Image 1: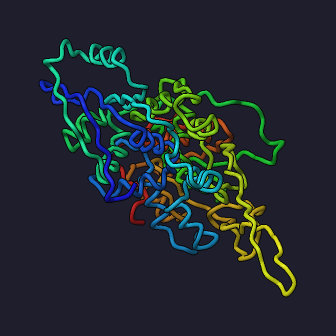
Image 2 (image 1 turned 135 degrees about the horizontal axis):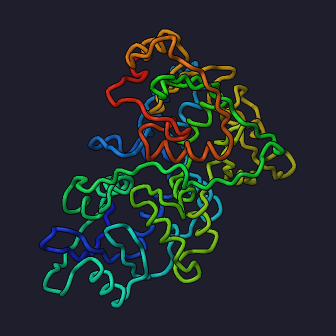
Length: 426
């Protein structure tokens, strides 16, 4: 959003509770909200990290900081590190390519929408407004006040932050200027119903991860994993927020008010309110940007179709038409085409992965320091190998966003005491 541009919203505010009940909006604000679903997690973390400290976004901050702290020699090339820290938005890539002059992004026409404090979006009507006010405990019009809010870049960033962790993003953004009703979500791994069909036939294989456990405490100390697993975990930063919402859809696990936004898109009639059914599908089943896939793609994410544009070269006789091929940014070879599909970190490689997804190159000395901090004697350490396939990868992806103990929650292990240091600063 242009830093100088602002969007004006008409709001109904409960005066007694100092709470935004709903806002009336045109397509511009709804486009902003829906665009959040297309944003890669790495972009979201980078944008909101400049504001007040945000709690409740699981291990994503740790994952982002791990990439920042790792030396360039750990990655296939310098571009791979930049791809994780500043991932491309696949929707922007796709719609700029195929709909370069379409005006608004997702919403069409001059429809007026209602957006609730929980970010439920619906077409506006008096009946809907009265119903929402009643459900929110507002008995008559004397209890509410009409206010106007102007939204600029700062408000959009605050709203993005609140979207992930707050029960009342609009109130927290426009009236409180802080998160006053944060959601502390317990990870419910059993409710993430991943599909179980075999995937090895397409060249995808499960990844082995070594978990170091305390036998007496039945607790995870840390994990040791290969570059394949680290590529998988780092790839979470390139995945759009809508993919996380899609995986928890229909379960009891929620991500702030993201679920409400996702459900709103699903319930909107694409013929009436959205540019096309293709736009709706892009919000409900987001893709990753071209060249951002990894070779062992356990999560089965689709990349946006690669762009081939005609170019014209001039020789002495006539103009010739040719197609531009996209070079693979992950390839260690400068002129390698996109069919390479590697990963982000160099292989072979081994890494230490903490329960909160702080990732460092493997170091026995650092591992011993963690055991000392946990007061786990060497004789009490037990190694357990787990096999990470599609189902485990989905659980880990969701846990990375809603849990501060992603590995323990993914593999069903009791959690470490909170005062235990991980591999920070090692």
